[in-house]
Length: 208
Image (cartoon, rainbow, N blue to C red):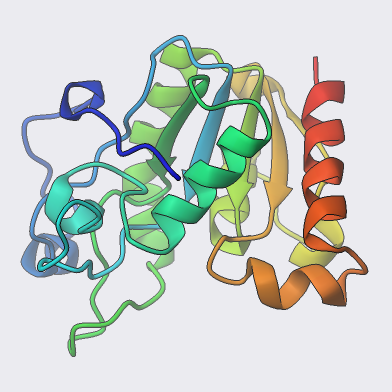
């Protein structure tokens, strides 16, 4: 069972942010990073989803103000990192801190400009925490982190579990599957659930 984060672990980097008018209009609140500020691992998602306001706890970052607190993806990634032995050693955040609405209540992909506007927050978090590794969940989080080194992603599937040095942030990027698509892609990549976890565990253990 995933542990819901304590509200006092939220790490707001600003009292408010209005860099992206469309995100300001769509969001309920800013979804800030959360977890220990001396975390060994920073886990980065793309952006908060629309959320589930009727849920008891796991409403999602758009309502809780805490990244990776959605009923599905939030619990999945937290359970996975706990299973890997990092229950109390992860800081969770997103590349884009506000819900990008498609205008009908569902998610859209953040624009390049929205990623660029929010990237200074992500870079600041990583520099403050100084993690051994940054785990990017999915293509968009990976793309945003590579952009900190002016690099582009050349095929996400081929990048999975292939560590990349981020010298400007003094850490190492480890791309993994996004929890929402994990079950679909694990078998396509030739893994079982357990062998995939073993591969993630071994990759993170090898990062110095």
